[in-house]
Amino acid sequence: MRINRYIASSGHCSRRRADQLIEEGRVMVNGEKAQMGMTIKKSDRVTVDGKDIVAIPDDERVVLVFHKPAGITCTSDPKRRDNIIDYIDYHKRIFTVGRLDRDSRGLILLTDDGILAHRIMHSSFGHEKEYRVTVDRPIDESFLNNMREGVMLEDQMTLPARAWQTAERTFHLVISQGLNRQIRRMCEALGFEVIDLLRVRVMHITLGSQKEGELRELSPKEKQELFKNLGMEDGRP
Image (cartoon, rainbow, N blue to C red; front, side, top):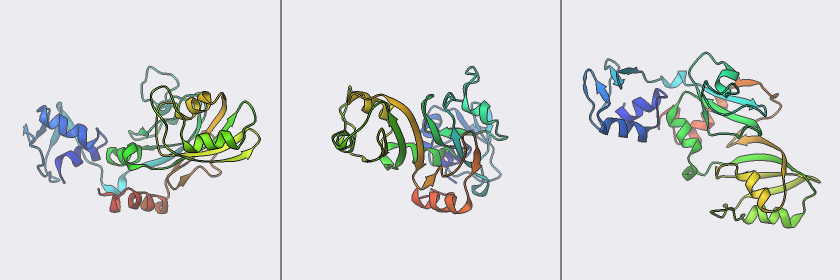
């Protein structure tokens, strides 16, 4: 296994960050400075800043689906009493794949796999996320068309999206971007305030009937399809 993938597979950081650590001379293999592109064997000892790094076997990788309640923050910072990692209290080290802002709720993925997290999160891959949005007053087709075609925010135009109405003040929005508080800002730019924001889908993974605050593991079928969609056959990039 290439050294940058080995480090990323441990959940320590992304492959790009692993390359930076190697260039900075902070990665050691069997007591000697690592070289870019070198191959790691099972018998090798890899450390970053003196800390042992162990890659996670593909069949042991954790992918979790959590129905985040409002009021929980997507951070591992122990100084935040509302941090999502302490709230879940999982028995292995995990981190969130992307974010939901504190006031939003719904589907958030968590994993111990840095490569997988990067391929889901990074905007260049264009993976879909679907939200159910309720605003403070009735919407019409003009509003939906604006959401579909793109909304000018303070610094940029949002990409085209899919949107359809499900109730007088509620609509679904499918986006492939991940700008900070994007949907709330889009609505505000059109003169609406978001009352409730629920993420119901990431790629093919849906919230379904999963209850608020409930955690589940990705099913084998969901995991297999996820790896396929990410170009990670059997979990390998």
